Image 1 (cartoon, rainbow, N blue to C red):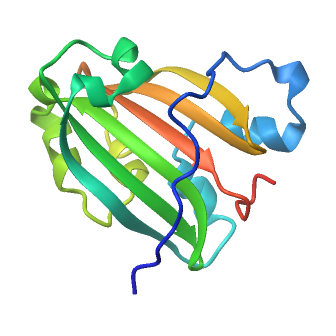
Image 2 (image 1 turned 180 degrees about the vertical axis):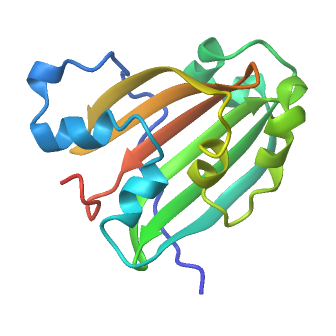
Length: 167
């Protein structure tokens, strides 16, 4: 059964390069995780599931600050989900892909449904992460990464909800 959940504040966060000396070891381990966040979550529960909230195309004005992180395009594919650990919401995530780069390996991103993005992305050897930025807002940590898969960019924002093992 689909749960009704509130989307955390994410749009106007101030994203910065992580300052390791200002993060606890636990925060650093989670926020700077170089691999799949899905796989990391799987170590802390019996079952990880995804509940899509929105999947579809939007125009650039709907992106806000995200637009500066990606190549210009007329439309962008957006996917917003909640990731659950043992039926408890742990992470809200938003993926943004410019429509013209939604081809090749990135084409499958538009049809993931309830499959975690990390399971898909990290199965490709040609995946590159350009950066991780972090943010703390309203007591919730977040991280934002820009990836490239076969040269095609995507922006992933992850907000860690209060029940996430990060806390």
